[in-house]
Image (cartoon, rainbow, N blue to C red; front, side):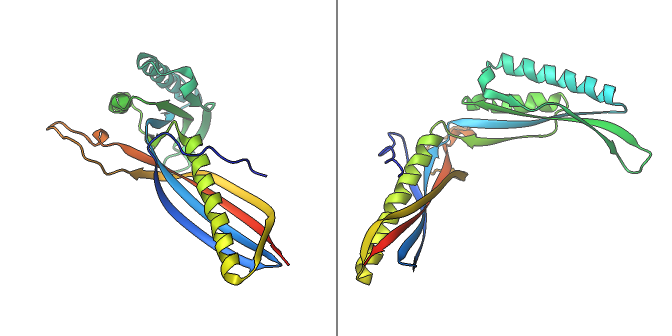
Length: 226
């Protein structure tokens, strides 16, 4: 049996989204319920595709290592903690530009960096562009994802139980014990939170607080008592 989850998060939570589905069959009532909550975005996950090209694998690898060293130096200068840097091994492949005769080598390496100082976001991008990096993107995240998922799941469970009790009452049947439970939880998308802000002439979009949406889905089957 699932344990009861943490009651209410002591952080900003805006409850959104709800979908439900009910089915009565084989002496059971089955409820599918989904609930979502929004969390304040206080992290940026910056994904970089570190790559380089060369006429030979050695040339491509050499350029790749130079860019890797530059990136490592940049992250150290910005005081990014090692635990917030994740990366995959370097891959090297042969490619053709326009015909089978124009062969070149290309490297690829995925790097993910997580940080809470939104002020360095622009600096990282400009530095990368100035040094030949051409593939990267950023996404908002939250330090409260786990609590948010538990909260959304708890809301879904309570809503599913309430819906099953309502169906049983209106159908003139007696709701029995829970037969089985299945659940899932995930980050849905990034959202926008509208709020008042005092804007100056040099205001930027980063001045507006953002949110991250997480969802909890539950499938509960209840026995019907005879």
